Image 1: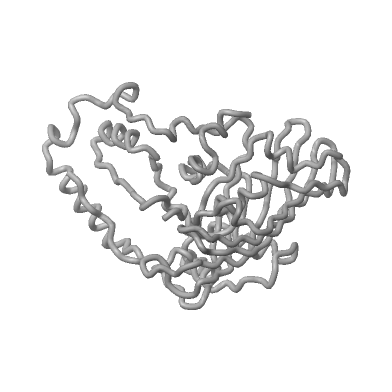
Image 2: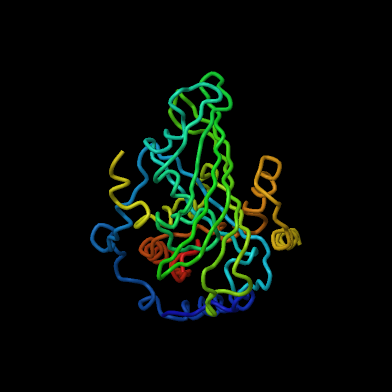
Length: 259
Length: 76
C-alpha cells in the first residue's frame, strides 16, 4: 500500500499533510497482518542493495564542517523560489588532515600568513558553500579567488588563525550562466598536540546572481545577497551525519581512500 | 509564536554593507538555523530505505518516506 501524504504548494500545508498521514495509517492497520508484514525480516547481508555511496566514508581525522546558508530578501521574491529567506540550506564541508594543515603557515609565529590555492580555496565555490541554491560551478568559472590564513595568537598548544578570502565567479556553461561576488572571513583554533582544529567559525557573504530565470524554478530578481556560516559539525542529528552533498563528483571515492 | 517571530526576522533582515568583523556576527546569525528550522530532525529519520523497512516491520508500523527531487540541500 502506498499513500500520498504531501499537501500544499508552494507552501506546505501541515494540517492537511497530517490528516493524510492519519488516513494512511488507518488504512495500514485495516490490512490483515499477513498482508502488511513480511514472513521473514530482510537480511542486511543478503537483501540490502549496495549503493556507491556506501563506499564513501569520512577519512580518519577529517575536519567536518557544517555549512548553513540563507539568502536575504530580494525584490519580487515568493516562496515558490528556494532562494526565499524562509528556506535554509545545510551541507557539510570536509577537509582531510593533509588539506586542513594547509591553513597553517609554515612558520608558526604570530603574524605569519599563507596563501591558499587549489582545491582548499576553490571548494567554497565549486560546492556551493557560498549560495543557497546548487549550481554547476567549474574551476574556470572562478575568475578571481584569494584565500589566506594568518596566525593571530599562539598559546600553549593552540594556534589561532584568521581566514580571509574574496571570490569573483562567472559561469558560462550549458547548465549555469550565473555569477557570484563575495568575501569569506573566519577564525579557527588548531591544537598542535592533537593535530586537529578544535574551533572553526567562518562566514561567506556575497551577491549571488542567477544567469537565466526559469519559470518553473525562480521568482523575482536575478540577484540576492547570501549569508553562509561554517562551523565544526555538531553531529547532533541524522542530517549532520550525512555525507557532503557533492560527495560523488566533488569528492569522489578516491578522495576518501587516500590520506 | 516564537517560531513565527524568528521566521519574520529572517525574512525581513537587511544585509549589511560589507563583511568585516563588525558585521560578522549579524551575518552569522542570519545564516544560522533558528527557531523551528530543525524541528523535522526531532524524528529519528533513517537515511536508508532498507533501515526504515526493517524497523517498520519490527514495530508493525508503516514507513513515512520523505523524498526530495534531488537533494534537500539545494541540488535541483
